[in-house]
Length: 167
Image (tube, rainbow, N blue to C red; front, side, top):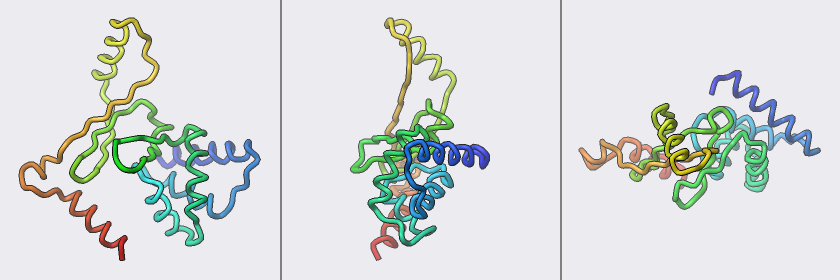
């Protein structure tokens, strides 16, 4: 998402909050700035950690109250990748029809779009007598590095970050 698109998304969210007669607190502002500063999928706990870098006073409760508002505003999507926690997709507003490949080794998430896949989905829907509205494709995969070498640089990075977080 471009910087201009991120600023537009933030502006749309601020209008959404105002329309619900909610206050824009410093904590909520830190959360919003964090969400629209990343293109990565994130968990609620990651959002909390990242937001606290901007404002140490951000509370877990404010994160958990703000996430449903982001989803309701249709600027972020909650995604279930079959893991222990939900993930949030900040690119949903910009690209609502995209697909994901999820690495089972390191939990890396890669988004992709494919015109041929979109055409195939439409053709299958029509063939079966349906009109396609939305689609979600999630592919579970294993890193090629992990298959070849028994290790994955992304997993090593994830383990390093978990170790740092547990200190």
